[in-house]
Image 1 (cartoon, helix red, strand yellow):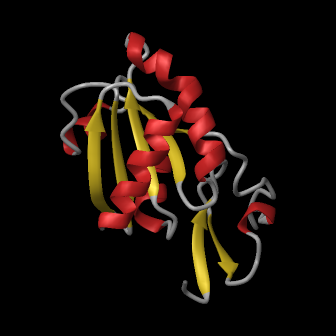
Image 2 (cartoon, rainbow, N blue to C red):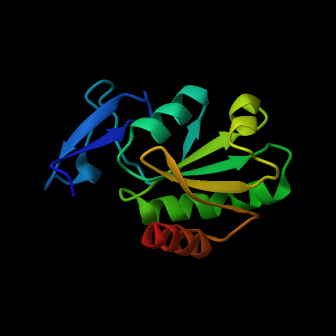
Length: 147
C-alpha cells in the first residue's frame, strides 16, 4: 500500500489523504468533516461519479440503476449490505441512469441494473442483472484478484 491513499468524500466530493497505518473508517473529510466511510452506497450525480472514479485510490463499484427498474429496487438492500462488508476497501456508488444519460451513454450502459468496477479510473469488469449481497461481494473480490 502507498504511504498515502486518496479517498473522495461521499458527501462533498473533496479529495482527502489518509496516511498508511491510519484507520480509514475513522477518517473524516477535511472540507465538510463528515465520515469518509459510513457503510452505505453513495447516491452519485455526474460530479460525484467523475471524482470518485478518477480521483480515488479506493476501487469504486458503480451501480447503474433506474427508478422504474424492479430488479434495481430489489437489489438496493443487497447493495447496502455489500457496502457495509466492502468498505473501506471498495466504495459503492449508485448512478441513476435517467438523471445522468450522458454518463450512461459514455460508459456504454445497455441494461439496468449494471455494475462496473473501476480502479484508478480504469474499468476492471462489469456485470448486468440483480445480485444478492454475497454475490456482489464475491464478484468484486474475483475482479480485484484477476486485475
